[in-house]
Amino acid sequence: MAFHGLIRLDQLYDGYRGVFRIGREEILLLQQEGRVYLLDNRCPHQGFPLDRGTLRGERLICPRHGFAFHIERGDCFQASSCSLRIWSVAYQGSVIGVEF
Image (tube, rainbow, N blue to C red):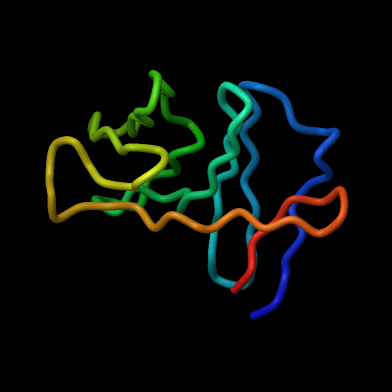
């Protein structure tokens, strides 16, 4: 596994959204209520970018079809067979990132 730095911690704030591409992966980083979440940026239903979606509490809602995903677990509230990959947050000094 290798660390892939995404952003410095001092650049984060509640409401932050950032999309990062690492190889073929497109990862969405969110910060809400002081917590950081890393998840796939594409809706598994039709691949629409989730960074354009609405965040309501723990739900990230796809702007295309309205599917809602739990930002911590990745499961879909409408279809149990449809879920997002959740990435583990990693830290290296003052940089937040992901390892894979």
